Image (tube, rainbow, N blue to C red; front, side, top):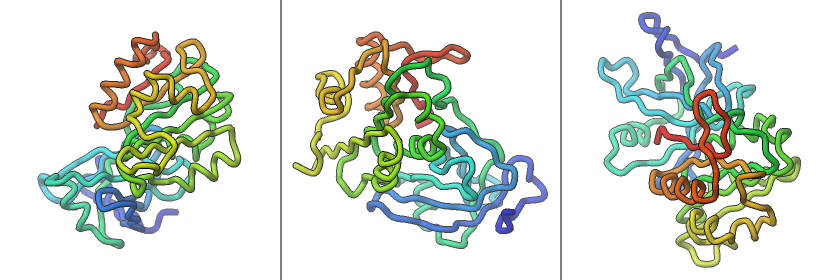
Length: 258
């Protein structure tokens, strides 16, 4: 039972106030925020939740963040990128353990692996905090049973931003998962250092992993900054990948709430 949850009796159908349990800093611009889980809160890996501050304010700031935890875990965790000059970032960087934060009652989103058509290899491509939903999916585990191999690619500027590296390595030791970190601004930090769209377009990523990157057998999920997702859409479309539509399976799926 979540004894730390503090419901707001006037608007409890829309949001509840939850307590901050833990804050973990990865880099000056990136941290994980763990909070209590609202009673009865349901979500599918890939969904996001909207967080609000200040608590109880008549005009709070609401922002969407992908859920990092698996549905069976007793708390919620989010990977947060600090936006310079951002109003929500200013509030979140000032929050402390034990403080309260609002969570909307319903999780949302369509970035769910089940939307993809059956395939052999699942490529999870991400930049920065876009890696968050993949952590949830792999911790939940069912996605691993649907593919012969899962490849998680995380591109960042500096090695300090490679959040959840140990978690990915532990998962890779248990399942058919390959973790491919890509650091673009530290020479020699990782085996691959170019932007992911270039690595895919040139065939370098497929050669590095030893798997084909074609629309017949590969399925691709893309989550990250707008330039990255736009470039990946062009690269994948040129290779014959088909986007998922509501109610229709496809071979590529994008997160669009950024």
